[in-house]
Length: 125
Image (tube, rainbow, N blue to C red; front, side):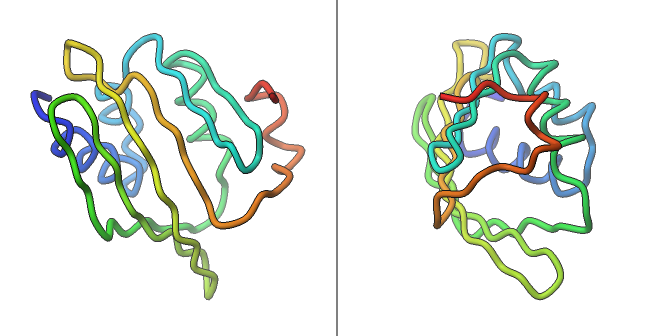
């Protein structure tokens, strides 16, 4: 992808579709993901793919509310829905020189302890 807005839109579309091959194509090999509310960090494409594919079971859905991007930086406001529950999220993205997502910082409304099932997929900080 040559522009951050399009890369982030494709990222969320691939996540919603659970199209992990398309998702992987958007992610840099050395991606770093951080979630400050849960103090989770994931390093590397393979680990981040596992984190998403295995770490979030259930029938959830994502709706993009807004994406703002310029050059190699973007921010998105999304809504995650699972059953009757709705969770807003703010995510910040940095792209590498090849246009792949290299850094993601993911903010959710409240601090929380991640489920034990994800412990093997992350480092805590």
